[in-house]
Each structure stands twice: as structure tokens, then as C-alpha cells.
View 1: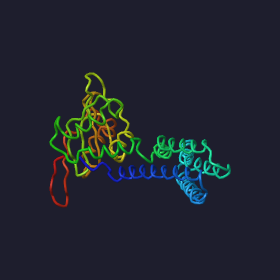
View 2: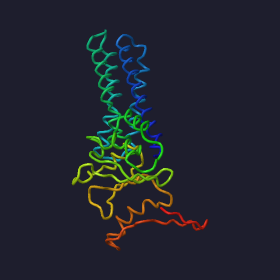
View 3: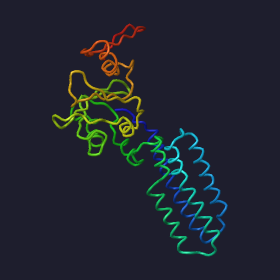
View 4: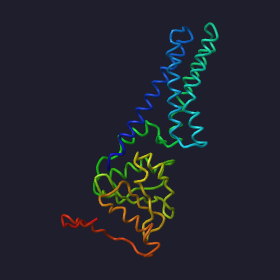
Length: 277
């Protein structure tokens, strides 16, 4: 098919690995802090810098309950780490409960990943885990072959989108056509006769493909039932592929009901050529 936003996927994976490295570093600093005060300034400085970054990140979000919750999640690891380290310095001696609290902090941050939850909540990161994004990019087809049941994109769809709990369970991808260097159309068909294609979340599909949500459409097919839908990904040259959806959604219902587009002819005025689409 096309490059499924590789840069966004790589950033998500790199950010996840950086966060895990920071978690391990913080756990090591807390453990060492229970025995010595040599790392006091470095640890408090690191936690303070992380808190400052979290506040700056929060300032870029629109005000509201989502922002408040995301900010609390983003600041939680750094704030609790600073609190634990201050406790270690205030209470003299080494105590088992201090080490237990350090281990609990590391486990919670490692598995829960509050900062990532905040980014997902605010739409700054796909809901898929970074590992799933990386795997999807590696397994996603890189070229379009002739349409057919064995098309690589159809196989990818069945393994990632049509599974139970996926963005389009119980569906298959057919009649896949490349409409440009980075665009395609296809037909989504329900695999259960008499069952409509489920409502597909463009946000979830965008996260799965790691593609701009505004360049993905799932529309009705003129003259067909709810068991099929047309999928469009990307922007075709001259936007010829988008004319089908535009006609169905905006023109036919208001000005020419009952009409459909059967073919599109694109004319290059300067070159004097005509291209069938």
C-alpha cells in the first residue's frame, strides 16, 4: 500500500523506550538514595525538570476536565518520586518500607505508564501500544498488487482490523485499488450475510493505520446495502478518488437524487491529455 506514517510510529516507540529508561533510572536513584545522600541534588533536579516539562505540556492542551486528568497523570510519576526521595532524606537510616515503596513506584510506573495514558487521552498518541504500532508498520503491505482475495492489504486487514475487538470485526477488504502514490480505495464487506458493516471509528482506524484521520473516509456505496462500504485512504491525484464520496454525501442527496458516478475523466489542460479514473 503506502507508508503508514512511519515517523509517527517511530516517535511513539522511541518515546516509550525513553520513558521506560527513565523509569529504570528513577528506580535506581531511589534505591541508591535510601543508602546515601550523594544523589540528592541530581535526583531532585531530575524530578523537578520532569515536573516542569509536564506543566509546559499541559499548557498546550485546551482547558477542561480532560486536561486536568491528563495533567495529573503526566505529573504523577515525577511528583511521587520526589516525595519518596524527600522522605528518604527526612527519615534517618535505611528501612525496609522505603525499599518496598521504591519497588512499588517502579512497578506501577512501568506497567501503568501514566504519561502514555495522558497522551492517549488527549489524542497525542495512538491508542495502540507502541509495540503494536511497530508490528503493524512492519507487517503492513508496501505495494499494491492487482485487486483480488489474495491482495496483501486484504490479508493485513483480516489479521489486524477484522479480528474480534478490532476496528472492523467480521469484515473483509475487497476490490482494492491504488489511486495514487499514497492513496487507495477498497470495499469493506461484512462476512456475515444480512449483517451490516459495523460502525467503524475513524479515530481507531487512523491509529491502526497511523494515518491522518482527515484523509480516511468510510462511505455508503450507491445502490448497495449496508453490508458494504467504500473505504478511501489518502488523497488521490486531482482528488479523483474522492469524487465518489463527495457526490454521495453532498451532491446527490440535494441536487441529483438517485444518481451515481460510474467513471471519472481527468483532463490535464496544459498537456492536453485525458486520464481515466
